[in-house]
Image (tube, rainbow, N blue to C red; front, side, top):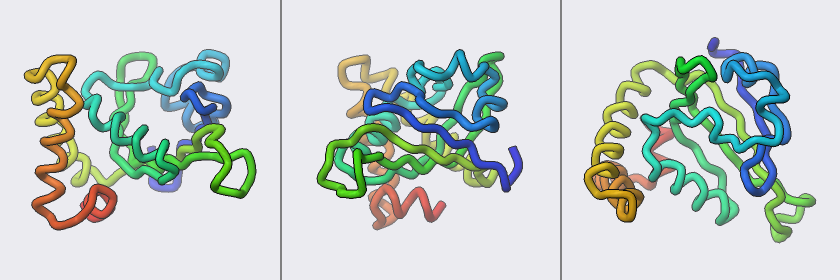
Length: 162
């Protein structure tokens, strides 16, 4: 992925893909037909902590945009990192309307920043596995927030400042 390429997708309110740009299709390695109508998590890499996606969905459902680093997996098993900006979409411009879907723009992250995130995600994933399925999200979130809180920033500020 080059610095001037943007991966763009749209989903409905349940996370099913309704639009994928050619760059997304190329990196995912699926055909447009294989992607449209399927859950966006078709490209979810198993190295991604569940708690990151919990934070994403909590943020979006509250009507706010989400920024985060995401490791995606292509159909052939290879992977690629992105810095994602995901925003809720509304029926019309009035933000009081119900969320009808989500719009995501992803770009190539700085490799040095990915190395920082990889370490954090590895620790989060380890905590999730140790905690077990029932407490995984809370355990992963605690690892992340302990790191974020030490910086004196909120999550968004932390991610954007890495």
